[in-house]
Length: 304
Length: 307
Image (tube, rainbow over all chains, first blue to last red; front, side, top):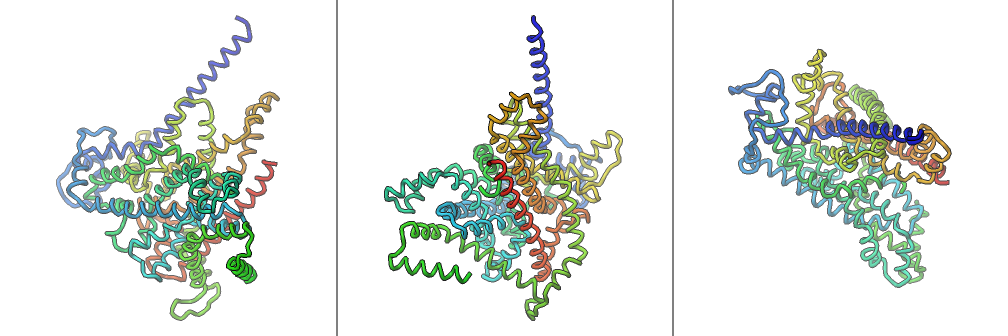
């Protein structure tokens, strides 16, 4: 065996060792990332007495009476002593309030995703065609609005909904959601990548603007629209600030706000509710992860 | 503004007379596509924002006396606002550099030859999809006084820390922030790494460049605009961390967790329009300034790298 071969082998062995170490480290990191999700799911299969026994000492401060065994320290368990669907049964069939809040969440999110994207595809087409200085300035204003923290945009939203009398109704969540600049911004960036020649060619062949928009531009943007729909869905499924301020009536609150207010007596149900709340985004994530990654990549850089 | 209106009017006039060239007509039609969004944004964001500015300059909505910057000075000197501002600043100062460095590191790891890449990507990205409300319980269990983390550190003989009710609370929120945002930043960095021209890296390796040189002189150079982008996005996201704190600790958390967002939220409750408006505008100016810096630097760097 000559020298060179030996060196090469040694180098490869070191490389392999490095890769293995990096993989193990990445794996450990990934476990930490997944831990909260895994724990929530496994805990949802515990019986209520088991959850009380495990976590009772945490939530016991406001718990009233009752003779239940509470261990001094908290036992966090991955695997329930006994797998039971009792919590899910209670949530789904015995306490309609959770389902009602879940339904509220759906009622807010679905129209917002649909209509926001509808308005945004039109607007993005308007922004990306026939660029002008005025349009650039308006687009910059959209970027600023998109990046504002909720605490700033909520003040105008609050004033408007008071002024036109929709404060405290579902419309106060819907209407600002429909016109949110987020989808417009991302879709414009996406559409600017479509070569103008494609659209011009159709124009020269006599197609009018609406035809170009609906028959040429839209099919080219399908992927972009899907990924932006996913991002918008996550954003509104997760909303907490808007309902807190714009909806006084707790009956109208989505599940995201309600989950934090589950009183301690029902702590055993909370995990099951949390999992039920997790299911729609989880399915979308598993099904559309590639779209999601693509959607995030468009955001790199402000100008597009 | 008047000039602009006059130009628009002339154009509409010529449109009806049929005098527009086809290009002008098309660009006018493109404004029609914009119309629904523009109207909505005007009604729900821009016009009421004008009212917010107005409210920030008057003494109260009934008397409507113009008071100049008195409201701003009041808010600025308000103890709660100061506390909230300092806390937010402290939080951002630690959380943002950590978020940028760790996600850059993650992206670099994901670029190297490790197996199961797509699984790792999914794992790191998953916190993005989890509704905060769903995992809040687990975080409470972990960081409670009798919770997991304390049990774990007690095993090594450390003292118990009341994570959510002491100065250490910021640590918890920083962990939550990183958990939630690292995946998102990592994807941005990965797409930036992928867009570095391969020829450049090949030339560098032919020229015997060390790994160190390749990383700092080529990769970081090419990624400079995305690093800036991620930094500012993280900074802006760090202003939005309220949701997690609210869900874990409610309206009035310990002092070290009292953020600007709590200040705004509690001011909503008291319906003090002047305070609210002035605070909103102060925040607006800060964020706009940040966005402007990002825009300007990106213009500068963008030219530099592509040219």
